[in-house]
Length: 317
Image (cartoon, rainbow, N blue to C red; front, side):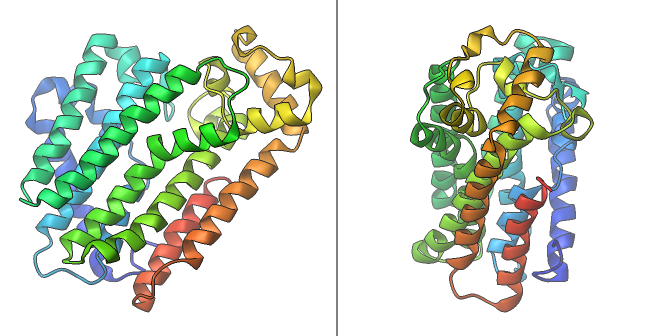
């Protein structure tokens, strides 16, 4: 997947990784100790990868693309730290969270610093349009979190409201990654809009499947207990659809889910309704539409984008 758009992508992704480590060390012991693990545990770096692949061809001056990829990943890392504070989450990918190991104050400050570091990094590109693109995504992330807090413990969240929340919290950063790649490569607004739509769709699919995994995935795979969303009051698509299919689940008060054992039992009930398959079908439809509507582009680049989209689905397999 990494090399499908050209061997240069892997090299620049390595440069992104190196710079992320440098940023983690450059702000002193606080960031290195409390947020460095979050940066290091970044998985497949899908967002920086989208920045690089969206650029198209190997750039003559790659430093700007690297900075854009680093900025997007730092924003993502900041949201993970802040999400763990808001959810009082003890584990992140199987490791203690900053909140669990250092407390609320240190975790909040570390997340704030990561967010600020992202814009400091991107500002070095001296591109107002790039700053605007990432700022829009940052604003969407905050608004999505506010909506999620507003919806906490509510059993009657409409599907449209849930999808809007997911678009704000997750899909807009995928969209920004694609936009930054196009802009830094010299593309115009129209070209950026085409790939932004691709990023938005696969980002939304990513979140839908993540919510499916919260119900279906074993702890050794997801790094957290099944039903963590249910325990912290986050109502997601599988639960929404399951309530439509089961009178017993429709009567469940989310506030009554008070232990991991209760959450796991509810996950089994949700699975029995077929809601997981229905949620997955929605995600697959988004991925298919994203690939179908890709603008006409170089074959290698299109194939790389399709592989990235497929990798989102592969997380569920």
